[in-house]
Length: 436
Image (tube, rainbow, N blue to C red; front, side, top):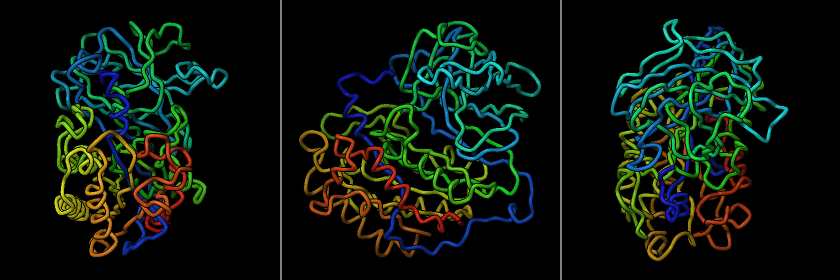
């Protein structure tokens, strides 16, 4: 990834959260389950990633050229057929996809996530062809494939780009090891020909849909680095939205389970662009994404079967940009209005503590007062506007020092929860707000 090494630690602390808690105020009814009640076969989102423009230097800016990238993902819900969504939303030119496959991993070599079970390799087609062109700024959707996908199943997607792509459209914090190699490697079984490992990115891959009966649709998480899993174990799928999906499946081990689509972006802000610098000398990057309101039409509303949106943003506006509580509240209210105008359930999470993170000026008592003011509004007047307020702050804070994370939930950087903290957040989501 193109982030300079001296900024990697700060970049991982550049973000925030998403939503759920025991102290809940809610007026939401069940999700729209008309399809479920009538047994229709429907497409539902099972996995998704928010995408941004490649950075100004490095691999994401140069792009891929006569190279394949093998990417690991985990579904949330399963179905009898699958389709893959690719995105060239932020590209500067049309991009040729020379070959694409989906497969299951080789479970006999779990330590090397590039190995696939060749008996499960399925070729993706696009309007019947094995290659296609993604227009500049456009999405490319594969033909439906008769490939049964299970709940929370690991899948491997391999894409080959025969000519230079230019700057990629990508997700910068995959928390999964992916692989790049020369030529068309879409069907090779092992890692020997993949010469480069990357822990940063999913490139061009933006979604996986499944076709299923009685689908209640999908829950979209609109968040920053806490939803994106910074602080969680790499290659373990321990982000809190992953763990929420597991809870839903345990509660409803059947087709009525909604998919969980994690559209979090590390470093994302409500009122600022990713390239804007922040406190402590943080320089800003494209991969942090545009402001949250600009993301609605690109990341949220187009998702397959979206029924509920969980918003948890604001911490980066506080520590990076020193925004006022009034500015943060105004944008949260506008996000809520636009989500509800689409007929979707709108949930919001309180902002979690971060004292001890970063250098001088990153955390201050004044900034914590802003955080507390936003949370007070969410628990008070804001509760009447949103369909549910999810008090993550109450879940993860240290009761002895509420401006800090509980030590047992602290990944070590004092802003991002560890696996236990992510589990606590997932466990705190009232499933009734998701229609269960």
